[in-house]
Length: 387
Ligand SMILES: NC(=O)c1ccc[n+]([C@@H]2O[C@H](COP(=O)([O-])OP(=O)(O)OC[C@H]3O[C@@H](n4cnc5c(N)ncnc54)[C@H](O)[C@@H]3O)[C@@H](O)[C@H]2O)c1
Image (tube, rainbow, N blue to C red; front, side, top):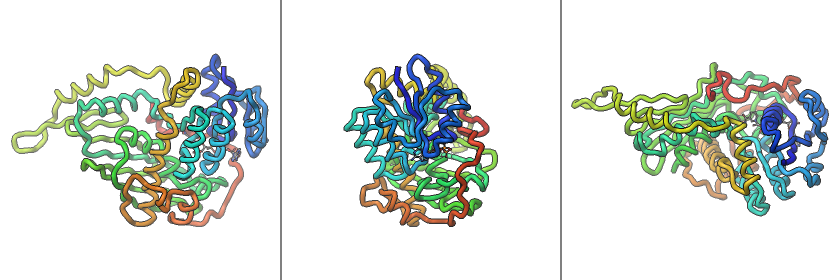
C-alpha cells in the first residue's frame, strides 16, 4: 500500500483522486496541498477524503509516509515541484505538459536518475486500447511505410478560459493550445512516428485577445526518409473534431479507428482494395484490449512500476520528446524559420526565459481571476472521441 499526496487541488485533481480510488488495495490518498489551502479543504469535503491539508507543499516532502505525489499544478511549476519530490525520495506523476521548457525537463530527468524513483508524465490517451492497437498496426508493417500523417488536435475554449490567473501567459502556462491541448495528440503522434528532422510552423491568436499565447498553430514536419506530416493545434474549432490519420503505402489508418485501402488500376487510377482492408482489420481485431483505459491505465502502470521496481511507458524521456517537438513548433512559428531537430542547448527556446523573450506575444493579459468557482472540467474531447 502506497500513500499518495496531491499537490494542486484544482480541476484535474479530482480525476487523480477518483483514479487512485479505483485501486484501494494498492494506494491511499493521505494529503492534499494547494497555495490556496481553502481550495484543498473544499475538495477534501466534496470528495469525502480523510486527508491532511497543507498550503505549503514542503510539508509533503517532509512526510516520510508519502511515497507517491501527483503534481497537478500549472505548467511553470511542474519541474520545480516534481524535482523536489523526486529528491525527497517520492515517486512522481506529473500532469501534462511535462514542463514549460526543455531545460526544466532536463532538471526533472536528472532528479529522476539520481533518485531512482519513478517519474511518469500524464498522457492518458496512450493508455487506450484503440490507440495502442493503431500503433501496433503501424509498427507491424502490415500497411507499409507511413507517407503522410495528419494530426487534428482541435478544441474549443471560450474567451474567459484565458482569464484564469496562470493561463494565457508564456511565463505561467508556458504556451497556448499547442503546448496545453495538442500535447495529447502530439504525444500520441510522436510515439507512433518518432521525431521529425525538421519543422516549419505558423501560429496566430484569432479569438482570445486576453492571451499572450497562440490559439491556433499549423506545423509541417519532414522526416529523414521523406515522409511528411501536418499538425493543427487549435482552441477555436467548434465541435472539437480530433483525429490522427496515417496514409501508408497500402492504406489509410486512423484514430478514431477506420481503414480504407486503394489499389491501382492499369492506368494508375484507384480501385478500392477490400483484400488489404480485410488483412489490416484482421490484424487489428486479434490484438488484445488493455485491462484499464485512460487515467486508470496510466495509474496502473505507475503502481505496477513502483511495486515491481520497473519503469513506465510514459516516463520523463518520453515526455521530453513531446516537449521537444512542441518547442520546435514555437521556435519555427516565432522566428519564421525552418527548425532542425534535435534541438540543442543553443536553441533560443531551450529555456523558459528564452521562450518568454523570443516567442510571439499576441496580446497583453488584462484580466486575471483567481478562481472560476466552477472547477468541473471536461477531460479530453467533449465528444468523447477517445472512448
Ligand atoms: N490530462 C488532462 O487531460 C488534463 C486536463 C486538465 C488539466 N490538466 C493539467 O493539469 C494541470 C493543472 O490544471 P487544472 O486545470 O487542474 O488547473 P487549476 O488552476 O484548476 O488547478 C491548479 C491548482 O494548483 C494550485 N497551485 C498553483 N501553484 C501552486 C504551487 N506552487 N503549489 C501548490 N499548489 C499550486 C492552484 O491554486 C490551483 O488550485 C495543468 O498542467 C494542466 O495542463 C491536464
